[in-house]
Image (tube, rainbow, N blue to C red):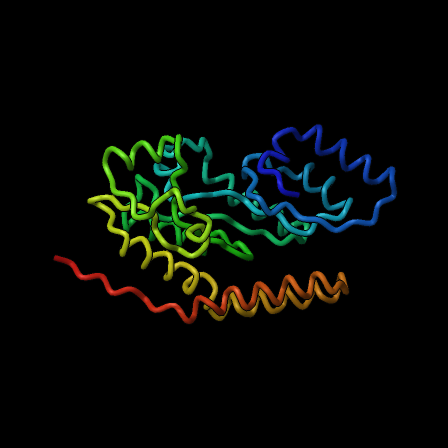
Length: 239
C-alpha cells in the first residue's frame, strides 16, 4: 500500500479489512511508505493481520525529539517504541525511515538518530539525506542561509537514497552528512545480533509464504545492504 496517510482514518482501514474478508481475497500486502507511529494500535494491527499484512514502515525522521518538533512533525518518539513492540506482537516486519542532514541537525543529533534506530530494534532501518523541494519551508531556509549543491533543473531522484547531500550549511558541511549516512547503514546492519535476527526472519518468511516474490524481495534487500560495505568512510578534516 503506497499511502502515507493510510492509517490516519482507522475506521476506513477497518472497513477495508472487512471488505477484503467478505470478498474472500487471499492477499499478502505491506505498508512501506512510512506511516505515523501514533496511528499504530493493537486493534488496528489485529484487523490488518487478519487480512494478510506482513510489514509496516514507520516514518520517524529523527531520533532527537527537538529536531522532530522543529521540522514540523508533531510526533512523540515514545510512540515509535510502542509501534515496534506491537508489530512484533503480531509477527510483522517493522521498518523505520530516518533522515540525516536536517536543517536543524548537528553531528550529535545525527548520532542520536542512528542510535535511536538501533535501540528501537527495527527489523530494517532506511536512512536518507534531507531533500528540500522547491516551495517548501526547508527550501526557503537553504536559499536564505545555506548553499545548494545541485542544479534542481536536472532532477534530484538520484540523491534520494544514495546519501548525496543536495545542500550544506555553514554549521553542517556536506562531508559530515555524507559520512554519517555511510556510517548509519554499517552500524545498523553489520552487527552480529542484527545479522542473526535477519537470517532467522528471512528464513521464517520464506517458509511461511513459499512465494517467489518474497524470495526476490529478500535477495534484493541483501544486495542493497551489501552495497554499503563497499562505501568508504569519508575522512573529515577539521580546520
